Length: 113
Length: 113
DNA sequence: AATATAATTGAACAACTATTCAACTATGAG
DNA sequence: CTCATAGTTGAATAGTTGTTCAATTATATT
Image 1 (cartoon, rainbow over the protein chains, first blue to last red):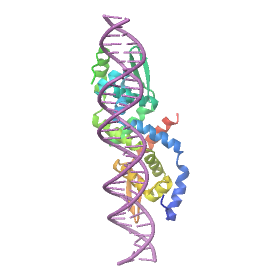
Image 2 (image 1 turned 45 degrees about the vertical axis):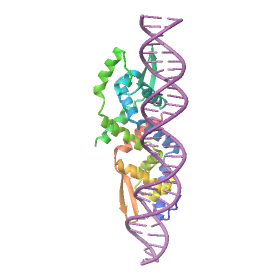
Image 3 (image 1 turned 180 degrees about the vertical axis):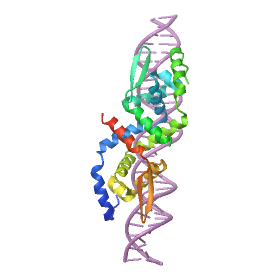
């Protein structure tokens, strides 16, 4: 990329550089936020915070197709934010992570300012 | 969408429905997480947590073009997560929100489990 | 005034993502 | 066994997003 000829600032850069986390950590972080960065998934997480529910319930609650719900739940499962449990003909989903609620609350504080 | 004929579950739905936040709130939340859901922007936020820096510094630190940095900083500014201050030829950026650090820490706890 | 540097901007492109649709699996009821 | 319901899956599509490139603005230096 471009060169930076300003000597003052390369000092700042070399001071901050060692304080940066591993790239792998940064990717994990941004991947986590990517999962949260969708209104359907936020709705699902919020709903599951209130109660375990099966796919049909969630579809009815959010007023979207069961297929769409199922696709998004798979993403939440993959991210380890939700877990599935089969009960007869239904599959019940529940939250799988206690951090989510805390992060949602903090983020809510932010957007409500 | 599809009908849900299971009477048990429509009860759950009608119980959870009033507890769901406004759609506008949910969109604000997911928009916030969308901004966090990019590794370049996470790097920028992390860097700015350590020190104010100008665009060239950030480009050097992250090893990407100044243009790419500028584009992403604009998104952070729009989201009110960063603010810009012109000093002579340079534009110095700083964090603009105290929630970000907290949320980053909580998210880090999550991904490090 | 002329030049070099810092930063921003918009267009273009490639990569990614969410929803829809249709097909499929599996379970429970009759 | 047969049928209806619940849920999953993969392909297709439309929309979004991040980076690059080139052009532009603005400031400092000589």
